[in-house]
Picture 1: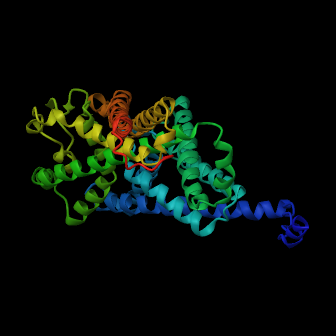
Picture 2: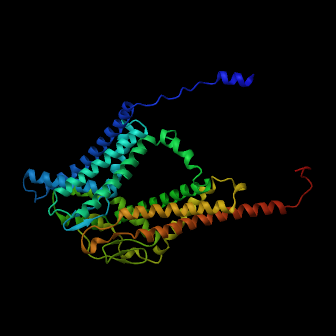
Picture 3: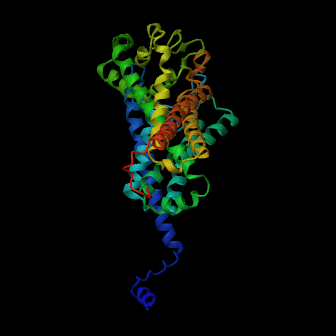
Length: 428
């Protein structure tokens, strides 16, 4: 009787009626509208600076020529921020200005959150539209280039535009539409991902991201120190370039797009491998060899030989400390009495894989080629840095996990070895 009553009082959930083609089109159009806003706003921000810089330069010949050159420069920089290689002055630039990447990701997130309906159809519509906008801009830029690029080069650029549209556009739209814990996409995917990896492995991946986040924060602090101590040299470089105050402001805003790159290079400096700005240069805690550098004020803040000291060579200990924090993060979310050796192995492996894999990706896009000849090598070696960071952060996590297990084991041994003073109640 109680069962019948409970069924009778239970709320009735009506099945959702199947969506018609018109419903799906309406949902997808909201994603398309969000994508058009995101592409237009992010491009407008870059174009404003590029056109202003070109018009302010003494070499600008007439308003039409200046606007055309500024539009071309803006398109190239906007695409470069999405990972599309830029052909300039007979060289190919592959260093992604991560400040522009962050701008594009933020704009796609905001427009999707405000304009798109959080459904899979809207996400697909927005991602496809954003990707097509990148591909169209790539084709138009290649068609207007002189001399015309080779077909293979254009194919590589189009492929990079597709990848950038899917990763940045799709990622930004997903953050905007489905970032809520009860969002329609994440709520449906999370149960399906549960059987793929053990809980401890997923906890290790999360802990690895925590450790890498702490390392990035340390890189930001180190970069700030470099900027403060090197502001005099940067000011001298800026003064040597000349130009009006407006040109200086535009130059500073433009260089801000490269600050995240410098932060990632500083994490490679902390980890040990260091980075390069030119084929014959080295910036690391062990040695510093700086060759001739371009006239960019931001490069004036790079660490000099005085930073390569025996004390500085101990900076990898800080990275191990980030791994220790990651291990503590994981341990606090475990039930100590249920932890076994395979669980610790899964956690340690997840920490190392997450920290190393993300480092490889970030260093790969933060470095590359910045010009011809010696400047074809800029940034850190992604694979070496990723391997070192994985070992250091993973090693720090292992130390903390083993220490926590050992401390718990010793506490259990002491409690077993404690003499009975006769006051222990029977049966306990």
